[in-house]
Image (cartoon, helix red, strand yellow):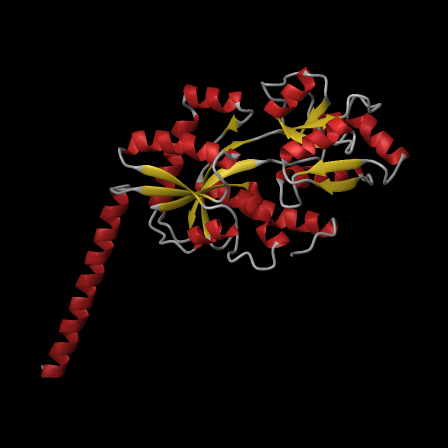
Length: 326
């Protein structure tokens, strides 16, 4: 055997050994996950609904893993982009809302692909929205509202917290399903949009359950439906939009945990399974129900399917509404 042939074989064996060692180390690291601090980035400000979900989950996962798990608020697209570019090792995760799926439809340069750059881990919950109208509006239910809108096309307004908000998208879907002409009036945030209904500046808004309950109790608005797939325990007497004349209406204001694309499947599955355990805890369910949220969970595959489906569906809805990326 010539020296060159021997050296070549030696290098090949060395490379194979190094590759095997790296793979073994990686496998051990995945089995031992997490063995260091985990950061969960929330692309919304402190006090937001996403932030609330994150802090509940973080506390429980920290206890289960016996590791430090922290929430880092990085509002806006830059926060999401940070996760997309993070190492896919399970130590940088993201808890976000379904607003993630419309990023490309409303932004020219979102800095990330909502499907390709992320791996779904698990849904953690949803926040149903209540359809509220002024108390003096002559409607008692969704059918009445649709009839009034068709009788007076272009004269009724709906308020929202902005085009990128769940309050806009859920109402736009309602508008398209009902085939009615009602005008969109965006406000700075949900409180201002709800106040617009109280003042009569808008004739419809979709509010969170706690907000709607407070306003209805004070006789400042009337609730006529809820946008969830099923009636909710907090408002058992309020019918869904689907059972109120629009059977095809579908909108889920979900919140969920994601990781950078390429994160090992073993890690995704572990985090998903542990989140499912958290969401079944009685104290977690009680806390979420009190704030108008519904706990849930899913497998990574199920969540990936939701992200893909919603991204494609909402892009078409926004296009049909005349919304173009800005």
